[in-house]
Image (cartoon, rainbow, N blue to C red; front, side, top):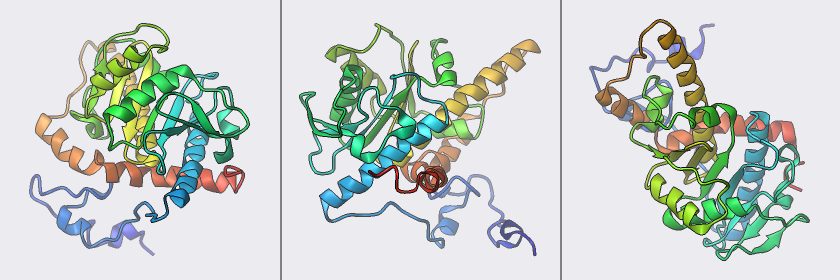
Amino acid sequence: MAPPSAIDTYASTYTDGHDSAGTATLEPGLTKKQASTIQFPSPPQYADKYAEREYQKGRLALAFRIFAKFGFDEGVAGHITLRDPVEPTSFWVNPFGVAWPLLKASDLILVNKDGKVVEGGPVRLLNTAAYMIHHAVHTARPEINCVAHSHSIYGRAFCTLGRNIDTITQDSCAFHNDIALYSSFRGIVLAEDEGIAIAAALGGKKAALLQNHGLLTCGQSIESAVFWFMSLEKCCHAQLLADAAAGGRGGVTVKIDDKDAAYTYQSVGTEKAGWFSAKPTFDIMESESGVDYKW
């Protein structure tokens, strides 16, 4: 039997030029008309904010295990925060020094707007930098529910160049006009003004390159913030390789036309695309973890 893509009526649908792009998924790049006929999964909705809190804490625990699996942990550095559904001025974060591969929802700590740990697991140590950066972003961006930052190797390497990424691949189109460069480094972020400066540089975008530091991404969902981080790390890796290869031949990489990048962004750069693209990774980690990640 032929694979589904070979017999799918959408696979052979011809579109002339830049037909209106769908925003439901990364692949196969359906038009809005085509996408409207397909029922895609969507995040669960909760009337009970306490039930939503428990679900989201489980997703945050999975996010840390995913980051660990991809090698994004570096000692005790890095943090992912979730805006609390019950008290939106507070956020959940990993306790300082607890290993990400072992992290459970019950280990997470709740930090209020004043930087005080008010609830959580047995280890209630707060990374000061986590509060300074994430509190500033959550405050400046009320629509954002998750912020992710770690010292991943390729992101860290690219952030030493003092420049933004080029739009040279389809994946990098997800960040077209949606990524900031914070061109400053003043050491570990232990002061409020540094966190505010990072949030200001981020503006309304979903990602930032923190010079001499690393990557930062955010999203309306944990899943989208995590996927944008994974994708941006790979974009940095791809560009480091491509620039080195092009330079070795005495040339430069081929950039995607602005109009083409903007068109592609409509399919690969939306919140819905980020959430849906992360789903397989979260499904795998949930299967690998069993119920261990909850308690």
